[in-house]
Image 1 (cartoon, rainbow, N blue to C red):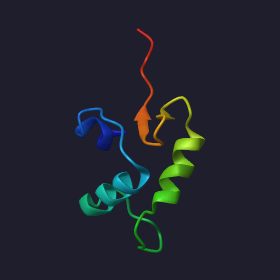
Image 2: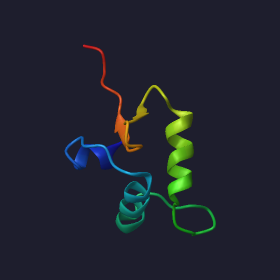
Image 3: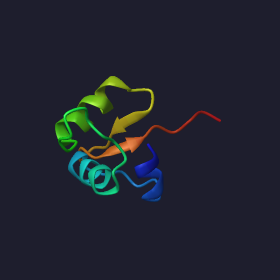
Image 4: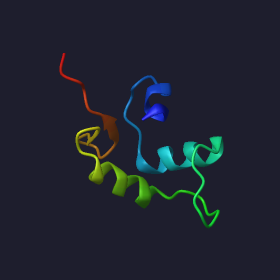
Length: 66
């Protein structure tokens, strides 16, 4: 979530999210391997109240009801 916020709230591809997470060391897998775009996609699917896909397939934060 924070990565998208840092990106000005603009939607990002799963690949861009994974690359940024890996570059910044924001997540460490138990086996030490880098985060993949397919893992990002799985998290997006698992948390539909937090994330959504745009028409072009990018990951966006869901807008909170105000």
